[in-house]
Image (tube, one colour):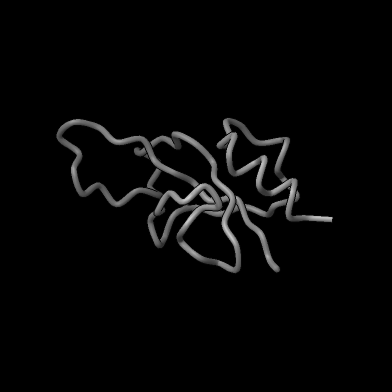
Length: 77
């Protein structure tokens, strides 16, 4: 199983449909995904082209979804 951190972007009024992943859209929260999917472990659907990082950065990157973090810790050796 391959895990990655995946960004959830902040939404702004008037920015509906903003692409996310550009430098103008700040990251609201990091979630954990499996096998390059777009659904976080917590169930949140994330943007297909959102920024991802290695799961080895878990614990060094903030803020991280609490639920994803708990589920990740229960699933990795």
